[in-house]
Image 1 (cartoon, rainbow, N blue to C red):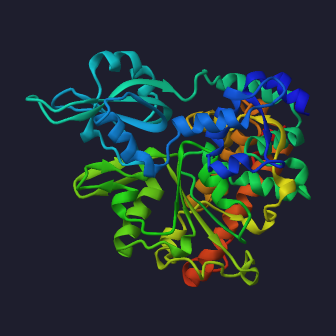
Image 2: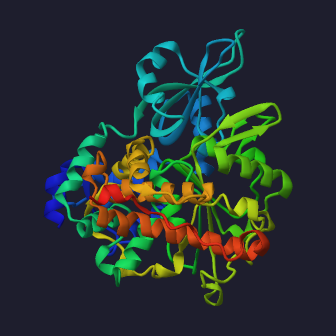
Image 3: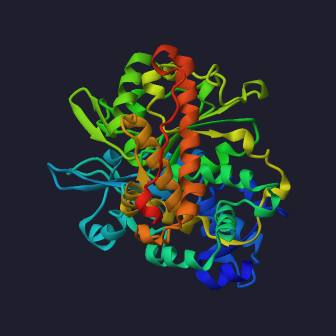
Length: 479
């Protein structure tokens, strides 16, 4: 399979050797950044110099605590400093001035500026998305009669130096069987397909990728400790946000009035709330109202500000073996915020994380695999392709009087599975109906049914004993 993968994807493949070395794990690099560096330094056989990579990381990937030292180099020593970082840009309506921010280091746009000539050189890359990774070169403009000192952008190189061809990716899928493709996807997110005991374990792991490819897909996963929840949701994609413990406020999630800044749901593909049992949500009723409105329509209002976002909301928590029962009540340990049926109903599906094995060395990839940086860019682009939802709408028969939220949940999950597993389909004629039913529709109904079961425990009078409607493939599609 490795040779086939290299022949089909060529430059988009890297050799990942996570079984034999802890070198990269010791550096605490996200997967997409690690694979970008591997691609930069590996030879044709996948060999690289750890010393060379270590020197590069020390020079260009600073820790947060080094930020004061960087500012000193910029201001005191008048140096130009290059770093690998996430950047966002802004254009002031009143003055037309351009500025940038480095959210990872707390550098705001009020402290920076971009010269017009630099803007013209770099704006094509800078405007590709709200936030993006790249090589940021900075200098310093000293204070004078025209204003205070500011950090200036000298140059910017996009983190992704190649064009991601989504149509090419879709077409290449035809070269692989479904079992081969499942293994390709697992390798892309750093897992060794041979380390899994069965098909169920593989598919449950891949279910975690659904919010990577589908907008505003809201999921809950409860799993035993050590199954890799934090790793997958926090380190695979550069378009995501993982929050672990602490406090999550309406200002941080949606809109900060004092800073006039949009929150996490506006700048990420999903917001994963890890260790959900330990997160403090402050004003519960305020947060519930904001969450319900956003999770239903993708819109929110804070004061006079009305905003929209595409991020899914993902709850991640640990669960004891005694509670691993999809028909029983599994939400005992969740914060009170999520124990309201109206809010819980807005979650589309539930992932049974106990079907995923605890992480062990045999599950770490040690082979050629898709570059994670490339793969997360592909998943990000798939979110904007409405073709798949149109196909799902044509395929699925919705029973009379079916609950609107059940219908939306099943269709949205089935669409995400279709994008992930069968990206090559362009219209309903391309769809193998048996495959669609087995890999997309059935698991979508199952994931939604678990949410239904939990609703029955939260509000027996309203939801008790109610199953997901019997969605099926339309009869005319089977002819």
